[in-house]
Length: 307
Image 1 (cartoon, rainbow, N blue to C red):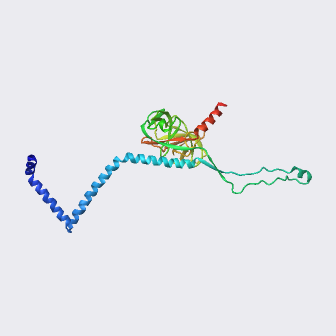
Image 2: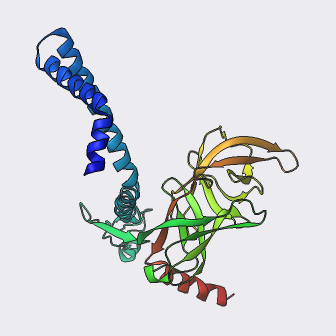
Image 3: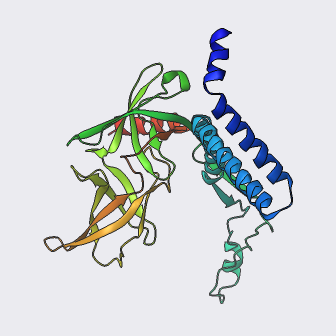
């Protein structure tokens, strides 16, 4: 207590000065003079500045939760979108095969035409929905990413077999393709990214021309699509999508055409495609689970064994 009193006694003049200044500013602010309005405006501006700084700090520390919530929301939206896209709708038609009355032809030798019974078709046939895939998406965070290897690059994610991930599943980002699952443990999985020697079936959106994309080693932003017909009027920035023939779902963006070369030896076009996914900043991915893929693979295995 004695030290506290000595401290006040030592700085008594300064304390008195500050106290009088605060009281003066208070009375000026309470008055309706020009100086009072200026003081209030300055005080409000200062308080607003500190409020903004406080909100920025709070928002920064809440970014992880916000990202997680957005990832869950995007996953739910993707599941709904691909549930609707992975079906075909057909009209079922009931019809009878025309039956020719040969007895009548024999009776009427002068007739040169057959007499078919009219084929009947039901009006307003019902729609038949055929599902050819059943996709759902598992969100995951990228915890390790390689882009510098010349042969194959791997990505490690924080989801594994416990979440339902298996080798061979395709992986996409929010904007494009990423790769395929290579190895899986209980809590982690590694992905062989598109930046590797694995080919991916793709098509040009505007021309419906199919081909295969291959990675250009040393360039984490580009892939190549060769042997395209020279007659196609391909333009720069044409979109390239997956075909759905392999593990990737159809209509996932691969990238856009950034350069077109003419190969004179076989009279074809070679396209350089800028990838839609930025592998340098990749933070979150979606593992694609197709509930009908096992049935399709078992059937195709029987075809291969019969050859």
